[in-house]
Image (tube, rainbow, N blue to C red; front, side):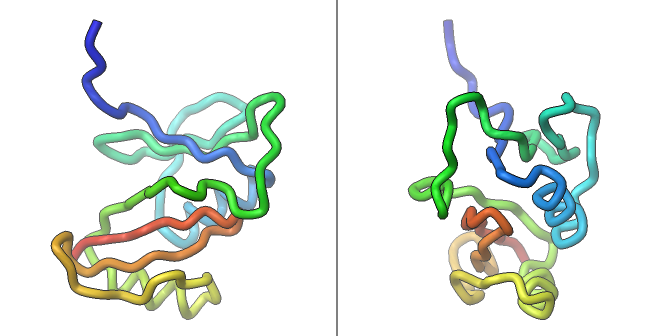
Length: 118
């Protein structure tokens, strides 16, 4: 048996509708078919979703501490400017680094997401 890599990433969220709307409206992600308890997005090469918490999971005020989730963008600075203009909390301002223009924001659930790209 061999594990070949990450194949799917899902964030457990308190408000599935609000989380899905955020990723659709603010990041431009498109929905893909998925189960009722989750909203799956058509991302490549790895599928991304937001989902209801698994039974017995109590999400803390700031979920995902210690996890680094990165999205690639064709224009990270423009996305930063749009998110900041919409009042989305920016956790780390844009900088130029080894992965291009990079910044981090907090989504409505408190997950910190990093975006990198041109």
